Image (cartoon, rainbow, N blue to C red):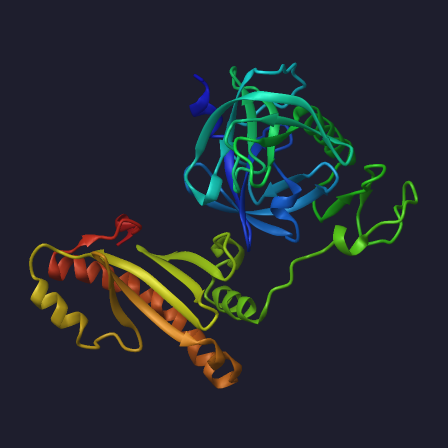
Length: 364
């Protein structure tokens, strides 16, 4: 498919607190289209652009019945965008599923249309044997001309090469309704009966009067105590916690200068903050080991994984129960970023180490 490079620039990764998905930019709406189930329970998400930059995205409208959501980012996007129009599609026609499966880099898989007639709970799906995996949800399904024919939505469990996509007609309908509704901000849910827009949590639809499962439709994912602690410390350090979320529960990443910092919970017992600093050098190993074993960076430790030197900080989760301990732990956890930004440069210059692969060495 000749248009793959252009299409690739319109496909984004959607990163939430517990999962990742895909989405694509629609220039007419200046918005991101994705699946509802990707952003269910979230009001703000991180949008990772094809160049790796992250922007804050707001969930504006969700259509749980059709499994579609519309997101807006904090500034205008300079992306080519994908046109969404009704197009004919036939059985055995070649199609391509685009997105970020399993938190991998951008991926494109080829298949054919296996069926156009699968219906589940009054929603019709395109069945395809193009590989659709977790993380692909919300990405575009395109034909051989690079035209959107659907949105990757789900895979049949315990089956091989059976994936499903929403047909493009549903996307066209959602785009039209979004424009007519004039949504600019806030969070809104489409009534599963009449598709009217609900602006607040109610038991009955204001438009058609149908009784609603309001708790499910307006549910917002609560943060547990550890999430509240870590994200509070990130915010105090000037780091947007939503942008730091990695798509895995209790796992955050951010950069301090040249250093990548990871914060995560290990085995439900320990809270870690870890930064890959540099690769082992071919020479000066005795001097390097003498330094890293000298306890020169307390309360942090140097650790070695394969050939990568890390700076690490660990505390037991039970320590967070004590308010005085919490204050100290928060300060030390966030100070690791500053030390890592200093130490990666020091190791490179002092001992001839190479930069860690994840380092932003141009900022070192």
